[in-house]
Length: 188
Length: 188
DNA sequence: GACTCTCTGTACCGATCGGTACAATATCCC
DNA sequence: GGGATATTGTACCGATCGGTACAGAGAGTC
Image (cartoon, rainbow over all chains, first blue to last red; front, side):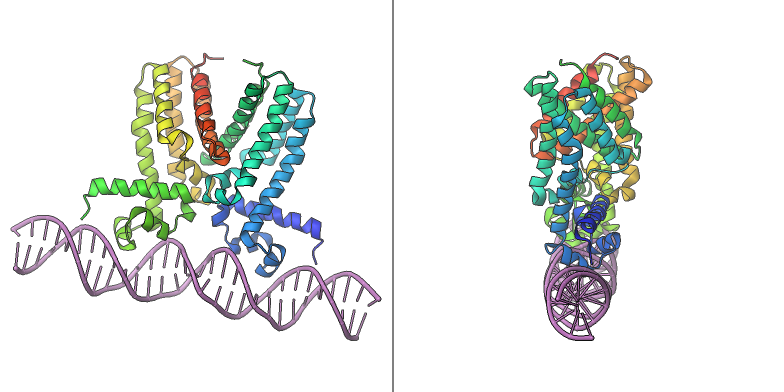
C-alpha cells in the first residue's frame, strides 16, 4: 500500500520527467508505466481522470514548487540584490543549469495549452507579479518593473529553448548571468 | 497533375501550419490530410518517406525562407542599424507579431529534436553567425558579437513562448522593440 | 483467522495511429 | 485516339493509442 503523501509526490516527479521528455501528446501510457513503474491499474486508481489529471497534477506540483521556492521568497524579500540572486540560483538548480526544459513552456507551445490554460498562464503570471513587486520596491516604476519582470521570464524560457536546440547548456548559464545584471541595473 | 514547384510549396506551407499547431507527434495523418486537402495516396506519392520526410522538408523550407529573407541580408548589409531594423521587421512579419510560434523551437523542445538535430541546430547556428558577423563589422569584439547574437535569438524564442503561454502578443512586440535597442547599443 | 478496503496485473475495448497496396482516374505526349 | 505516366481514393494492415473491467493480491483491523 502507498504511503499516500510521499509516494504520490514521487510518482508526480516521474510523470513530470516523462511529459518533459515526450510532451503531453507524446507521453503514452506505455511510457508512463515504464517511467513510474506503475501498471495501468495503479495509475488509474491514483488518477481516475487519466492522462489529463496526471498532467494537471504535475503542473500543479510544479506551480507549488515555484510558489514555495521562487515566488514567496521574492515577495517577502527586502534586499533586492539578494532576492534576485536567490531566484537565479533557484532557477539554475531547477532547470539543471540548462539540461532540463520547462514543462510549462513546452505545454504552452503545444496544442495541450488549451486544456491547461489556467495552469500555464498562472505559472507565469504569479512569477511576473512576484518579481515585479520586488523590483517596484527596489525603486522602479510600476510599468518598468512589470516590463523588466516580463523580460526575465522570457529570457529564461528562450535560453532553455536555445540551449536545447543547440545542445549547449552554456547558453542557459550565460543568459542567467546576463539576466542578473539586467535585473539589478538602475532604472533607465 | 501538380504543377510541381508551385503546388509543393503550398503543401509545405499547410504542413508547416499543422506541425506548428500540433507538434510533430501530434500531427496525425488525419489532421494532415484535412489541412492539405490531400489524401494519403497523394501524400505518400509526394513524400515517400512519410511524416518524417514531410517534417524534414518543412524545416528545410523554413530554413530556406530565413536564409533568403533574414540571414543573407544580414551578411550583405553595410548599415548595421538598417540591417537590424530589417531583421526585426522580417521576424515580426514571419511570426505574425507573436501570433505564430516557431516550429523549429517547438521541435527543439520535443523528442523529435533527435530526429532533426541538424536542421534545428543549423537554423539557429546560421542565424547567430550571420547576425554576429554584422555586429562584429559594426565594431563589437568577436565574443561580444556572438554573445549579443545569442541573446537576440533567445529573446525571440522566449518572447514567442511567453506570448503564447499568456496569450498576449504584446509581449512579443515589446520584446522585439527592446531587442532592437539592445542590439544597437554601443559596446559595453 | 476472517472481514474490510486499498491497491494492482491482466485481459480486453473501440478508435486511431503511420503506412502499404492497388485499382481507378487524370494528364501527358505522340 | 492510344499508350505511357503521373496522380489519387479507398480499402486495408498490424501496432498502438487512452481507457475500462475485474478478479485477486496485499495490508489493516478486530
